[in-house]
Amino acid sequence: MVDKHTLVYHTSRGTFEEKGSSMSECAATLADCGFALCNSGCLVNLEHVTSVNKGTVSISKFPEELALSRGKKNEFTEKFMTYMRNR
Image 1 (cartoon, rainbow, N blue to C red):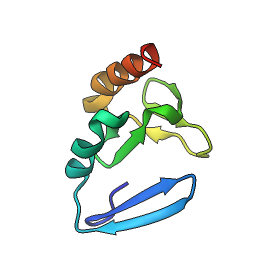
Image 2: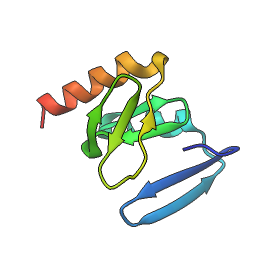
Image 3: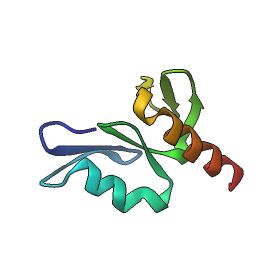
């Protein structure tokens, strides 16, 4: 999640912040590691996706659904399906 140029990482080990990096840099770095953008401000580890619905993504151990933007829907769904096939 992005908050005024501060990346916030929600992990199983806790929440961490990183300043000075951009979401696009982070997404590019993690693209080959099973991560995908579900909207412009949220990069998701596909290993933890439990469902993809019309406009939301559900994550294991995360109480809220994440918004799946119309612009990212096809790419995200394709990456998720590819990830599931290759597991």
